[in-house]
Image (tube, rainbow, N blue to C red):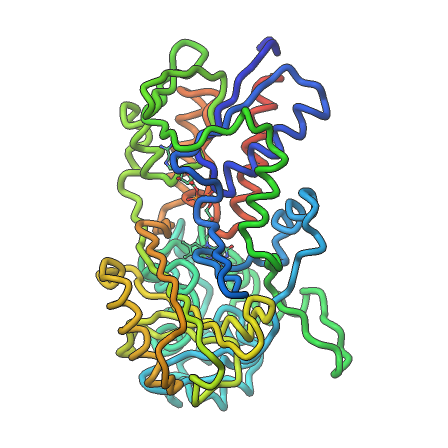
Amino acid sequence: MTEANKKIVIIGGGITGLSAAYYLQKVIKEKGLPYEFQLIEATHRLGGKIQTVTRDGFTIERGPDSFLARKLPGSKLVKEVGLGDDLVHNSTGQSYVLVKENLHPMPEGAVMGVPTKISPFVTTGLFSPIGKLRAAADFVIPKTKQEGDQSLGMFFRRRLGDEVVENLIEPLLSGIYAGDIDRLSLKSTFPQFLHAEQRHRSLIVGMKKFKELQPKQAEDANAKKQGAFLTLKKGLQSLVDAIEEQLNPLAVVKGVKVEKVNRMGERYDLTLSNGKEITADAVIITSPHFAAQSMLSHYPIFEPLREMPSTSVATVAMAFPKEAVKEDINGTGFVVSRNSDYTITACTWTHKKWPHSTPDGKVLLRCYVGRAGDEAIVDQSDEEIVQVVLEDLNRIMQITEKPEFYVVTRWKKAMPQYTVGHQERLEEINQAIEEQLKGLYLAGSSYEGLGLPDCIEQGENAAKQVLKYFQA
Ligand code: FAD
């Protein structure tokens, strides 16, 4: 392929599209390549699910609030755009699981609910003696012989029993995916658990070994333990703003939706919502999968994306004066088991986890509502949602006043569900793209990880793939 004046269109200005644009622009500039790109975003702002609100001294995240520090593409991008000094780790503290009416401290040493230390599991009130005995069967149960993918629920129930799954693993995992663990794919969400089991037979032994291999924190008892998450002092929106500032403004189009992508010879024709048609030599689609499927609906290869579910959730941030919370709890938050009669699925004591987010003398709580199969609450009014959340919280914490203000954010179909067989379906689609639609790339939270660092990495990889394609 000749190199003259190639054009790349990036569809979607969430963190995936922004990362693709940032890294593409960087290489084009550094190498003086004769390529141009355009990023097209349907709404009037960039950032997609990243949205920060600042109000009365509070920094409130409507969507993601942080990212895993150990996944390096996140902090790498932050440092590249000059925000390295704004990175902050979360304050560590006790977290809890709410089961029935009781808040149970998370057993020490649990990795996503899998025990790696025995005594905290023996003494926890989270499980009955029979539940604990059943979990101990993990030491003798043979490793799974299941070929191909299986659900997280099937895997964990077999190894540790229903009680540990329902009271600990399910609330933790569904806190990340807002999903149904009996449908979520083990291979596409937590393959490390399968590897641990296959290598060591026992999942508990495998995760214990895995933990021992992780870099050790300072052993000094006075040293403050560093949190596993990172965020930015001025909110995650500051990352979006910093990337936008560095992108060529003429390359960014907002408020325009891509309606159709069609291959014409070696190029692509894109139909836009403003009535215009543009052409491109390569296209990176970073919109959610259902939007991608809609713009490519005339290609049957994308049909599996139509079937891929997404869950709706809402976040509810509430600000209080400190005195309003009569029965405060020493910790950073809790997740709620499905078998408990609550509407909230999780609550973060944001003022404790992220002290920079809250002025002195105030409390900031952020709760989640909605999860797979239980999403009707998301469609209720702000007032109704806040009322339900406050009733739930009052059963645990005694909050005597109404919040000074609240921010409710609905996230409709925002949590893509990697159900069993996800990876195989994705491989088939990518194979068909390679054969029929060269120069087209799918990237973002619907495909290979929904954490921010995963999305950033996918954006960077898509940029690399386009460059490789042009230079082939
Ligand atoms: P999006 O952010 O969805 O961006 C896609 C963009 O495409 C949007 O801006 C959209 O308007 C645009 N678009 C759609 N259709 C079209 C079209 N036809 N034409 C042009 N543009 C279009 N991850 C973490 O790591 N840590 C967290 O703490 C965390 N918390 C979360 C909390 C919530 C409530 C949610 C919803 C997600 C959370 N996540 C978290 C996940 C993470 O935020 C997302 O996976 C990530 O932001 C997705 O980025 P993206 O660019 O792939 O997609």
